[in-house]
Length: 247
Image 1 (cartoon, rainbow, N blue to C red):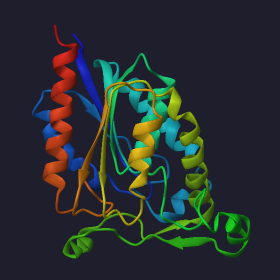
Image 2: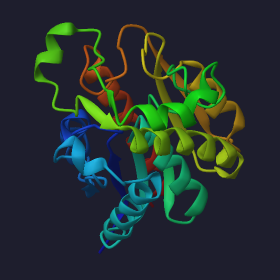
Image 3: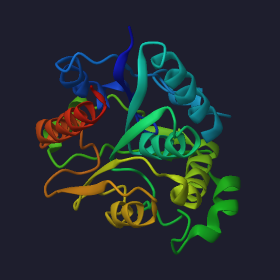
Image 4: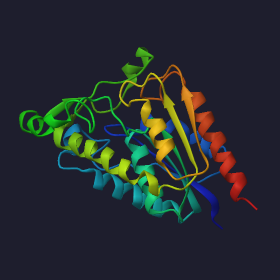
């Protein structure tokens, strides 16, 4: 017999699974099946991202969703950063299979000046020619935690530009998202502009949606100094969804 809900737990761009696996005990405490896929090019070396695009990351997440649904009737998709973009696309494309989404620092609007809509976006073609790699420094409010960071410290420029393209693509699909949504964002995020949360909230078509703001964390919200509160917030959302679907 299938579980009423399962959880798809998605990491971000250049992230390791360490950035999201702290949630797993909170999922297990509810007795829910889950999947935590490694999206293409990750958990190896930065060179593994060469030639990888957002379509590959989405395909890997979609395959994990299909696998999860062998054990669960529907899925709650939890996504950190780029994983939040993937969660939004899954919700748009699979509304009958995605029960709801929980977005953590979803990377819709980046502080990177070359990101779509920012002042230096026009320089993308030039930068593509001049730079093959871009540094990816850790992003924690608690600097002591940076010593334990296992993300890539750099990324190939073609993968970064595909990621930037993905932010614009997902923004255009927000009105297609109709499932319940929990949106978690920190005011002090140094990678994603906090306005991302409000844009997502205002543009998705969901009628059941809310933003939960955090005051201290930087971008790595599921590893930074408020991580337990982030996990508890997501777990409470999972309990709410379970109460809705259980007879």
